[in-house]
Length: 181
Image (cartoon, rainbow, N blue to C red; front, top):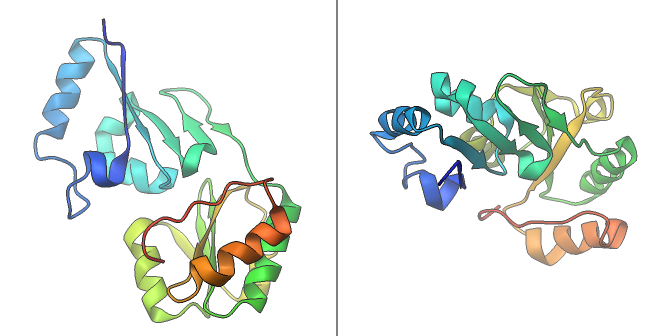
């Protein structure tokens, strides 16, 4: 007996235009009637997922921000935020790396620096919602728990940014390259 279905988003549940299948809500209703829970596991933020799924979100499980946030229906979320020293070290590194824009993913908001290039802003807007644009120095003052940090870099991500992050953190944190920047 199936009790739970878990799906990734990009390349699995969503089409090439990043949209849900046309009959998704009907399928959700059928699953609900059969007492089958549907869950999404994604690197996307909680805010983006809840917005995408709308009313169906209330009966779903979300494993978001690469597992740093787990939301079960009608329960408090389970959060595994980054420690402040990791956030500070990452911001310090990005300040020194050209072409690297940090995106702090909190439970309620997404934060990125006001000096982010326009093409990076466009990329951020494709995947994130409810963002706050801050002067770089104010990024250090964000008090909301940070669940994930995305580093946007369209030029030297794998050749420069990833090795620099590994030099600072080693195996303490997992780095994932997602998309082309």
